[in-house]
Length: 336
Ligand code: NAP
Image (cartoon, rainbow, N blue to C red):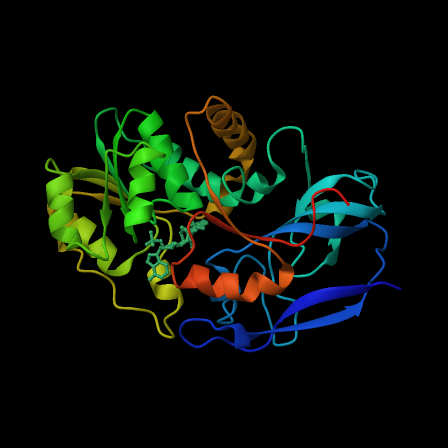
């Protein structure tokens, strides 16, 4: 019986996660039962919200206790199918976890077409993060042509999809990102009009300079001081999409929110976004953004850790904001 290499959730993280919050082991491979699939994982997505799962927050049905295989979405290939909808060799998307092999419920897996676009994009730009940025911009706070849109974590999978979608809708996009390299990429590759490095500039003043007529739409991935600096620069009747608060995920207690007086002055609208309400729009994302990618109008990048063993360190890098592009782990080669 082959062994399954696994990364376990070892203990609740305190503050920034460290590699000691995880443990590696191997266990005998489990066989699938009726309705299930045995798969080999190929790519693992690392997502900021896993940090909240590690706090014991029951996020999206995921709850972890020490000793459990770390939770995560994967692209995988079916080895043995006990579900009529799948055959050995099919590529699927599912919650395969931080491990070499997994047993998935067929009902919860989605078949992928490897001929359509690179398989890894199902975890990034053409998956949950891309859908988040796309629906937030198109359906929650659509900018009018010529309006100014600001996006934080502007080069990540959510931010770069929101920003490029806004640009392709005719808006002027200004990014907020955490390094010179990220800001240069945002202007050169993503086509933003400008990008502010909040680590080297006073953000409030830099937004006043780069958005002289005020900010019409803000897509917020960060919360905290970044949100406060944007609120201080809102245009009249601005729209704000509250998507993520990564600045707070490493905190042990909920942070005090920004002062909301500027929201009143601007008569602004704030909207909360949870991507799981919008999964019916995945085919639209794949069609629209997939076409933009093929036409060379839309760019994405990936930050790929080379092995399963490297997953804990890669996740810690993500939670320190040091990733550049969609954070992924290669667990195995695409073709066995
Ligand atoms: P990502 O951009 O790949 O990675 C997170 C980025 O956040 C970092 O690279 C860093 O970029 C930035 N950041 C800013 N302040 C930070 C801080 N204090 N600590 C760590 N990083 C910080 O992430 P993503 O997958 O695209 O997700 C972006 C946001 O969307 C996250 O908040 C995530 O939780 C949220 N999200 C929400 C939904 C939903 O349904 N609402 C769905 C998916 C994701 P810079 O160096 O450029 O600052």
